[in-house]
Length: 418
Image (tube, rainbow, N blue to C red; front, side, top):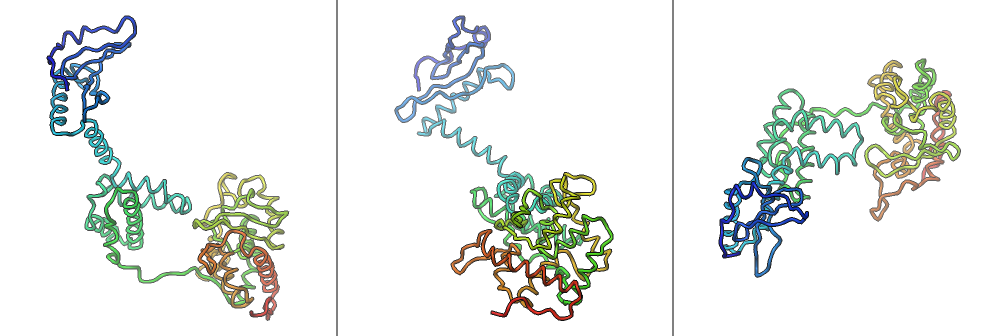
């Protein structure tokens, strides 16, 4: 740091300084490394020149001169110079200190629970779940967590802070929601730990703090062959819209998740090859589904109705949106199957009968269900695994359903038990 004369500048001198006539910036020194740089546009910028560890370092920028905030006055600039001199006397680099302060200030803003949660949603959660699930979880955060903990620093949130929020949800009779919110927060805290913004997951301490609901209700599904045959005949005779009738008939043939069927797009189908290439809604490995002849016949009829839409089953209000998730549910209720059979139940029906009645290997069925299936070496099967076997299986399944629909009282298994 310079030891030459200091305090050479005056406020009038700075105010009267003019932009350089030749366009070249020039300096007005106050001494001890503090100076103002006058730019070609006439701006007056405070700088501090200094040496550290025996070397000249790039000047420190303090800001623009001004007698009123947000400008930096002559007095303020000299106080900043005094701080820099004190830091150098302690063997500290002023630039490193300023960078650390900026980082701390940035973390104070970025590392609130809400900021971390929003980052987790964009970077992780949205890629793992369906858009509908993601939006539902964002809503839970906005309704229950952000008002109480959103502005809090991640590192300052304790288990009791989160428990207080969960108890409030529980007191409103939303026990299941409270449990889901705890899991959601736990995922966010763990993301914070992985990215260095949190030290631990306080939500983990609250496992079991919220009492589980008394009962778990499984999706209703029929497995009795006579009852299935009657149901299939009922679906075929559904007197609602042709689009819904086809959806009800297609669902047991392909037994995908209801949302995957509702949101299916024509672009993903190759009717000539008899395949449907889709990505499971639960972030599974993409699956190529072979289509039996019965499904292809339904799709050909459907294309005449909805071929102008992106979706096989579009909304009644817009070709640009998929069918509502309540449409098929309401249809099943109208047909008298409330509490007996759900659209999701076609999956359980297929899983049970394909293995127990038609003697197909469980791994073929699990692959078709788009469940996570691994080979003996622990590697996930890809989307074409067991493709030929699954094509045979789905055609046999469709033929089996046809025979039930025709009212056959005894249906011989398609395959001999292996």
